[in-house]
Amino acid sequence: MAAADPLAPLASEHVDHRFKGLPPDAAGTTVAALTAEHRNLFTGGFTTPVLALSAERLQHNLALMETYTERHGLAFAPHGKTSMAPQLFHRQLAHGAWGITLAVPHQVRVARAFGIPRIFLANELVDPAALHWIAQELGTDPDFGFVCYVDSTEGVAQMDAALAESGAVRPVDVVVELAAGEGARTGARTEAECEAVADAVAAAPTLRLVGVAGYEGEVPGATPESVAAWLRRLTVLAAEFDAGGRFAGLTEIVVSAGGSAWFDAVAEVFAELPPLSRPLLKLLRSGAYVSHDDGAYREKTPFNRVPEEGALQAAFTLWAQVVSRPAPDQAFLNAGKRDAAFDLHLPQPHTIRSTDGSTRPADGVTVTALSDQHAWVRTEAGAPVEVGEWVGLGLSHPCTIFDKWQLIPETTADGTVTGYIRTFF
Image (cartoon, rainbow, N blue to C red; front, side, top):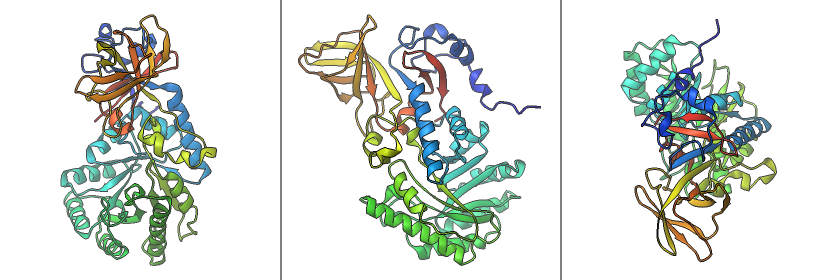
């Protein structure tokens, strides 16, 4: 008997008022039925503001990172907190991902509810209720793979106590997190502290040390040189742990790093790792690539440094409508902070769609501020913008684009909607 499709419940979900931008006349139908209609984003009854995800650009990004990680001998566990979209998790797995990285217990529960078999939790987990649940998942599913950070002896003691109380039958695999430097985020600050944490894990019967990890994006004042230096501290730590017999009995050793700004440095330094006593799982965790953006990650993607390896494409457009034109140099759109990411950059207009369906570049049109439900737009001379027109906005920071939209139309270049991406934040 074939295994049930874990994504099937998403197709049977009913469209209603919970989902912004979707056609009012589709209320009550299922997502599957609405998908089968192949409506057009611009003429099919969608209301503004509406966020659209480019099917072609999404596919390009998925394929590019699959090729990149294979070329560099990296396993890939893209960070799922970016999208919190199980459909995208499964596409990432289909494009060669080892598993999915997540940040907090709720996210792990979402991933498990939709059948994700391997999860890397990039945080120390000390919540007893969450640890009890993890112990149950590990106990009932022998194929479930789970790894999480540890960065303190106190954390290890709390984890061990909670897992012992839950009657855990399988140890939880952990990696010691090396901090990215003084004043950085989480992680043990020194190699000596990392050794103390590893000793504590060795003494905890409910835990098993499987490697080392960290996040180079937190290196203070990061430069190519300082990021590479920190990554070499991480790889040296792995080698020293191995030489000390800390990984005896494992089938592989995990060495993990990699956000979306320095994965080229991770690939370069991880390639320098000498053979250890066990095979290495060199695990990259970049997440923002899946949609990329028109701001922060366009500026700092590693592909800017290695253009011969390819280029990611910004896959999101937020379509908003001109609802007021109170002055020759001013217009207002009906999308604001509730709809658009604004934590790193303001939205950037790139296309104007007239009421007759024609399009033109949004030259001379700039978003200068956001209110809760309005974008403040400055228009230069010679840049006519009329009430009723749609303005396509490029956005910055994938993590805060996805989290404002629960059901996102996936569209082809001509506006045909080919699917709907469900998020869980």
